[in-house]
Length: 98
Image (cartoon, rainbow, N blue to C red; front, side, top):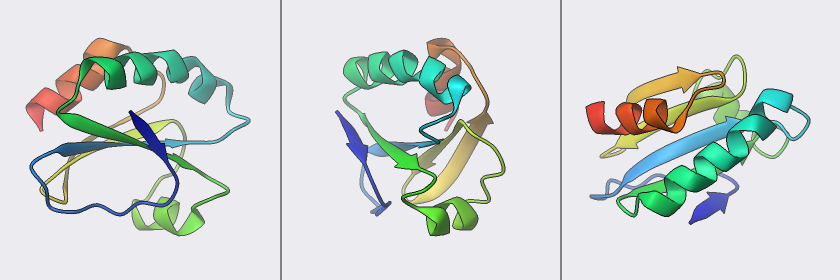
């Protein structure tokens, strides 16, 4: 399941993958199927998509300089990030190392 919108991150047992993107961004569009596939295969991680024009404060608070950017949070704390186009194995590694 992929949630869209503003971020509220609780300190739960479930990890959270934040997907910062922009609607007009070609690399972000290329990542859509990768993130959907990851979300369908990983019930232990909640995926949240944050669009640039909908959440400028979140982009600022997470210091997002370019999109796509993926941030993995566990216990409410950032455990790692990837910026740019990547594969599902890279996302899986980000989560497993976090």
